[in-house]
Image 1 (tube, protein in one colour):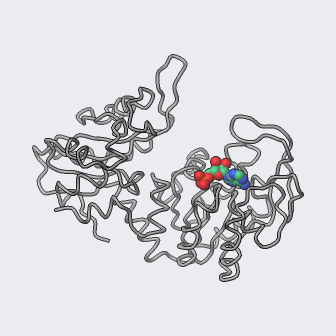
Image 2 (cartoon, rainbow, N blue to C red):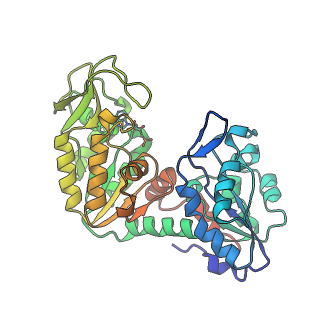
Length: 378
Ligand code: AMP
């Protein structure tokens, strides 16, 4: 897929360049009211592009959204802590306030685009994590300015395209997370590409229930049962868990509040119990498949990994993906966080900065942000 690169911008010396970054990083507010950045991976990932431009004499203006302020200024979602962190690396870069403080950003308002590009000569999109959004700062500037993809966006697009076009086989996708309905489009798209599709997390229970297994009170979406059954009938690529770790009725789970004792169940789950992680047999079985593959794509936790009683399955998969020896791509979100927390990031071939964007790219083979760049007057 052709995407204009930084080199296609021509000489940037003396030019004002607007760079759409993704500085939407996790932050916490300390007791003294100061903000602390929990993980600055996305900020650090923007540096190669910003530095490339600064080193060549461009005047660089970076912009990003932070959280969901819904078109209103919100001091808790100011970009100031991110700008401060960026300035530790690159003090020359001007940083605009949170784009979503203005309604025009999410509404893709042309007047807002024109305001944003006033006095700007060139546009660079390096915000992979937001490239699936039809928002003003993503799809607007390329209509008016010579534009290019930054290094991060270009790399993400290139890696994901290579998975879709020519993966080394066996190519195995691992998908987890909560709702099967959110990822059904992706499941169908990936079944056309992969040799095996491992399913875990809440979404696996709809597949199990659809084929007559008792899943107790586990998360299921009955509206999806027909589709699940149809997919299982039409392919033998889907690999489902064979055991699980479950919690009894009325017990609490999650990051904040935990009660009750988790128990392992082989096969069916008794009524009243909720399956919240894959069990040890499934972990071993998934590990075997992963170890025998050449390319892995992983998105979504295999259980409620934010609760330590249900994190073993996700950790086992993270460890196998880190060590299987082939080409590994981990989509953003919880699976990327699990890899980081386990200190395994250095063993992953490509850790994506964008969960939603990587899923949408894999499902549709394109993103609004990439299309806008291709159609810009570069
Ligand atoms: P997603 O945003 O769809 O990737 O889902 C991530 C969420 O799925 C995490 O917050 C997990 O707690 C949740 N999750 C994973 N496995 C299960 C499960 N078996 N039951 C309920 N929620 C789950």
